[in-house]
Image (cartoon, rainbow, N blue to C red; front, side):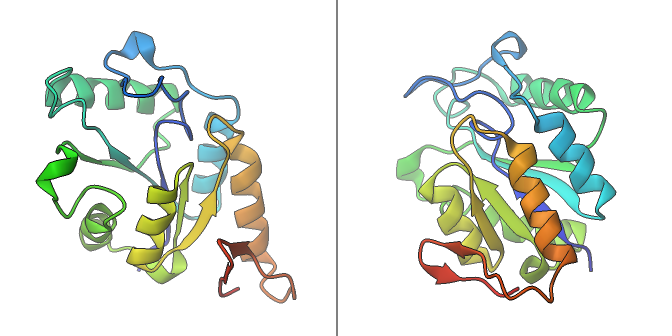
Length: 179
């Protein structure tokens, strides 16, 4: 089985839009510093890079599935093809689907389709729902500042994976993770 680093999109790879707004067109996609380097490091370290994102703008008809796919294709081109897959929830909150974070449906689907060992994988996000999703799926989790530097966070993960004999434990929301 493979290991993966699951990444939220808005606020982690690209600049998060204003509250109650969405990145609806490629021209609105502002890639954050360090994102390309982070994805390169993920791939060089033997992890899959998988984007997990809620995209409610589709349900609200602010963009189509095709618009979103085109944006993701352009994003992956800009990232030199380092993203292995994109999984997104296009439902409204009230639909109570299994794929909308914080529920772990998208991680479970990705794990099944891409042969990923969730216990050896990470979820990186900038919101509590991202972190809850990772915990619910059984991954390790890492919270980043919204619009922070993803490369620094990935570097810490890769370093902790290589140095398993270290006595340092990573702590997130008061829960010690296995090292």
